[in-house]
Each structure stands twice: as C-alpha cells, then as structure tokens.
Amino acid sequence: MCYNRKRVIWLLCGALIALATCFFQYRYDNKYNFPGPRAREGVLDLSQHAGDQPFSILAYGWELYPQLLLAPGEFDGLEPLFVYLGQYGGFEGANGSGSPHGCATYRLTILLPDQSKEYALELPEIYTSSRVWINGAPVQSLGDVSDVRGKPSTRTGMVTFQAAGQAEIVVQAADYSHYYSGMVYPPAFGSVLAVSDLLTSRLLRTCIVTVAALTIGILYLTIGVKTGEERQRMTLFALSCLAFSLYAVYPLFHQFGAGIWSYRLEDVSFYLFLLMLTALHCSLCGIDGRPRRIVRGVGSGVALLALVVPVLLAGRGLSAMMAYSRFLDCYKLLLFGWLIVTALFNRQKGGDTDGPLLAGLCAIAVSMMFQTVVPVFEPVRTGWMTENAGFLLILLLAGVLWFGTVKAFADRAALTENTRLMKKQFSLQEENYRIVSENFAEIRRMRHDLRHHLNAVMELARQHQYEELEHYISGCEVSANQAVQPALCENHAVNAVLNYYIQQCGQKGIPLELKVALPPELKLEDWNLGLLFGNLLENAVEASEKVPKDQQSVKVYSRIAGGNLLLTVKNAWDGQFMASGEKIASTKHEGTGIGISSVRALVDKCGGQFFLTPGEQEFVVSVVLWQQL
Image 1 (spheres, rainbow, N blue to C red):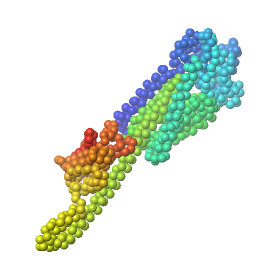
Image 2 (image 1 turned 60 degrees about the vertical axis):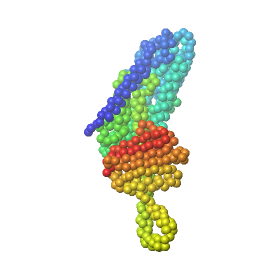
Image 3 (image 1 turned 45 degrees about the vertical axis):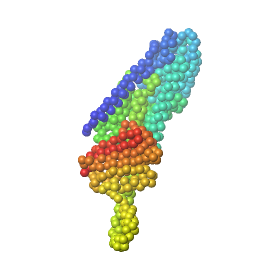
Image 4 (image 1 turned 120 degrees about the vertical axis):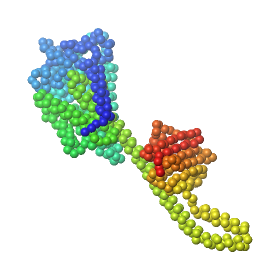
C-alpha cells in the first residue's frame, strides 16, 4: 500500500478547514456561548441591557418542575431545579427514574425596561406536546399534554407580545414516545425584527442547501441516464445528493408542523446518504468484491435500523436509547475512518476525485467528532457542523465530476473531429489513388498513340507544313498536361491533402501558394500527417474566406531540415482571435477550437513545438517535429 503527497495535502486541508470552521462555529455561532447576560435561578435581567443587542438566547437558568404540569400562578411553595436547555435529552436527569419520558414545566422570568414594547419569542421544537404562556396569557398549544395516549404535535415558530417591566414564560411539556422530551433547544428572545430576521436567515440557508443539493442530484441523474457516460457513478452521486437534500430539509418540515414522521425521515435520509456515499466511494476507488459487499451491507442494515429502532424504543428506558445512540456514533466514526484510509491508500492511478473525496470525507469525520466531544453546541445561524461538511463534500464532488464530464465531452468532440478528418484523409487517399491510376492509364494510352503522332509529325515535316506542325505539337503538349496531374511532393498522404485543397481554393478563388518538399516516408504515420496538414489547411481556408476577395491568401511551406519536419501555414484573417492560456476559442462554435487543439495535442505527443503568431495581416502557425527521418 502506498499513498502520494497530493492526497496527504488534500487530507490535511480538509481536516484543517473543518477544524477551523468547527472552532469558529463553536466559539462565535453557539447558542451556549452567545454574548450577553445569562439567567440565574430562573431570572434573566435585561432591564439594563435592552439596547445592547437586538436579541438574546435563553439557554441558561430555567426553572424545571419535573413530572408536574403547572399553570401560571401555581408555583408557590414548590422548589424547582435550575437547568440549562439541552442539559438532558429528556426528563431522565430530572426525575431520577431513568425514564426520559413523562412531563415537566419550565419557567423563566425576564426583567425588561419599564417602557412598553413589542417583543418576539422563538418557539423551537418542544417534544412532543406543549402549552406556552407569556405573562399569564396562552400563546401556543400543541397536542394534549395531559393525555398519555395523545397524538404528538411539534412545530417551530415565533410569537409576539407587548410587555413592560417583566415577561414570565411558562412552558408545559409532555412526551411518552419520542427519543427527545421537553425543551431541548434554547429559544431566541428580542425585538420582533431581530428574531424574525434570525429565523428567516436560518430558513434561507436551509432552502439554499436543500435546493442546491436537490438540483445537483437531478442534474447528475439526468446526465447519467441521458449520456450513459459513467452512469453508475453519476447515479450514485445523484442519489447521495437527493438523500442529503431530504436530510437537510427538516427545518422546513418542522416549521409547518409536519409531525413525528419528519424526524424519522431525517434519520433515515442521513444514513441513506452515508450508504450512497459509501457506494460512490467504492466505485471511485475501485473497491470491489467482499469488502464492498460488507460495507454496503452494513450501511443498508444501519439505514434499516434507523427506520425501525426508534419505533421499537418508544416508551423504553434510558439505557436502551443510550446504547442505540452509542452504536450509531461508533458506526459513523468507524465508517469514516475506513473511508479516509481507503481513499488515502487508493491504488487507482490518475483519479481526479481522490483529493476532493479525501478532503470532504475528512471534513465530515472531523465535524462529527467535534460535534460529539464539545460540551454543548447548537448553531445560532450557520447550521449544524455535520450538515455543512456534508454540503461541502457534495460541492467538491459535484465540481470534480462536472469538470470530468466536461473533459469527457471535449475528448469526445475531439475524437469526433479527428474521425471526420481521418475519413476525409481516407477519401483523399482514395481520390489520389484514382488519379494516379488514371494517370498510368493515360500514359499507357499516350504511349500507344505515340506511333500515330510520330507518323503525323513526319508527314507534316516531309510536306514542309511547318506552321501546321507547330500547332499539332502544341496540341499534343496541352493534351498531355491536362491528362496527367502533377505530383506536388513525394509524400502520398500530404500530396492527397494538398490536391484536395488546391481544388477547394480554386473553386473559392483563394490564391494558394505551395512550397512543399517532403520525402515519401516519415516517422510520423501517414494518417497523423494527413490530420496535421488537413487541420491547418482547413482552418487557413476558412479564415481566409472571411476577408475581402482581394486580400485572401493561403501559403504552405514545408520541408525537412536536419532530419526535422518544418511546417508553416500562413493565411489572411480578420483579426478575430480569443485565447485563454493555451486554449484558443473556436470561431465556429462555443468552446475551444477542436482543430487547433488536435494539432497541439499531436505535436505534444510527438515531442515537437507549436507556435501561433497572429500578425496584423497574416495568421501564422508553425510546427516543428523533431527527428522525422
């Protein structure tokens, strides 16, 4: 097993970018590190800090009354627990019974300025039934908190209210079936505009990520189905994108109160994303046989467990739920460890996807580990770390596969053009062979007729008819010149191309100057030699046609010097020339010119040199091919 330095660099870049991004999120976009005053023992004092920032995150200092459903005014004489939201995944830490299920009441009092003002409170998911009061007035009721068999109901949103002096928030929550219970996510509180902008920015981010992943998936699925090129990889990548889009869209479902099924869809979609990603990884890295069957089988099993186990665990104890959670964490870490190692030591050569694949996989693995080991984290605006890393991987692979697809289409276009020129070359060779055969037949006929011509000449000379004799001899010379087509050079392939373009230029009235002296045999194959001359002459004639008739011209010079093939083609042109680096734009279609690209590729393959000189009046292309004899 071996690895190369480029892969290690990609791996380190992915790890460093992920670490830097995760640290930035944890430090500056974390609800639990959000700047501003924090609540203590159920009271948050904003009376002196109302103008310091537009909104606050209500994470700390909540009063918790486990297994009690209390309405405003019913708290006298009761001793609360003081917790931060997210400290427990359910009610297990509060009641000490080991069960995450049951009911509880949360209360937080916010001290405000004496002036009456309109405020907004974000309402995150409260699992899985809830009632909310602000200053004694009910503002939201989802499900029935008093009914153990009641239908769960969760959704996100925002409520607005007028308050002066203080705002008492009371939340009743009950859950008997979900793996989260009660208030888990800290809400935002502040001015209506600030809280509204915060929620809008989150939804906008969700829409961008979801629509982008969905669009990329549909695009690549269409490319794979329509073209047949790399169909398996395109389809797997498209399915990965579609699964990721279903995984990332959950905030929209929660916004509209889609129900508990949306959480199961979120879980299953994530593990389907990992399954499709694993299958794509095996395809890109050439992993087949037993290892591929094992890893895909395990991935399918985990995706199935994500669909079935939450239903089976409904109402079970904390230990079973924690065991299932640890199992999933171990699976994800082991999976990404295997993906990174196999990508790093991939033996496939020339894979353009190796580096970006490594960087994206490493980014997801680092994000998952970071998100697991940090004490408490929930993003304010930028989304969960794993989601961001997954989206980064999709963008990286989409870019690599897109450039690979474009390159494949360009190669196909170049191959099609070369095939066309080869067919033309073959037809020119056939035409050249026909002409040579006709020349031989004409020579045999002339030799047969020579005796008759000599008799006629002798008779005219004997009769002293010298003027008629001169006309007769001139007629024979013209007939001989018309009958036999002269060879332009000794090389048959080049001769065929030159004869073709002599006819083309003659028909189009373009002056053609030829000074070509090449031997019959060169190291360069005849068909490549024909492509070289054919491409350059075709471009020269087409460019010359675009200028006025009195300025049109094409000149071809070629010879052998010191064993090297020298070729120069000059033509009049209109000055329209666009190039980017070594790529020259075509004047006949969008994209790079295929003819010039084909000539450059041929010259590079032969280890020669290629020169372009766009002059004021003439466009000059020069080619040197070393040691052709």
